[in-house]
Length: 163
Image 1: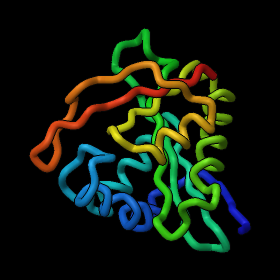
Image 2: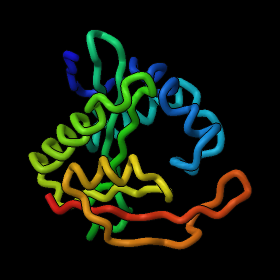
Image 3: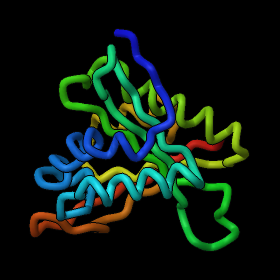
Image 4: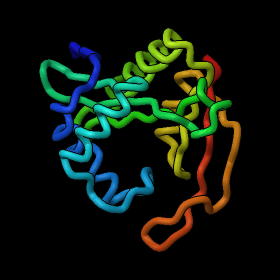
């Protein structure tokens, strides 16, 4: 594997939608319920990338996954805390792509004076928990029935790392 991690750009929107939209439609790992169109994803990449970090990973030229950080809360006192996420192409899972993306993201956040990062995980999700903990996050909260999808209530956990 020859993984390259780079800044994502709006041209990556189609590949990101290909990875993300199946989760929207078939899983509870995201609470979005409608597929994201490529122009909307391109806008998200541009907006998030302008203020925070939005990264893409390629393995031998094939799009392998992405990670990003976004504002945790609108209040000014939270300006150094971000919420983070990572998604890996199904064919690339279990090969270290998620770990590499997350570590690169956390390094960039620390270099840009961010203080804390929070991963929000719909539960149960042992793979996401393992990834977060491998990257140094620890569980700091558990919210019972915080979200709803597919007609059922979903618990949510917060994992945090102080950078």
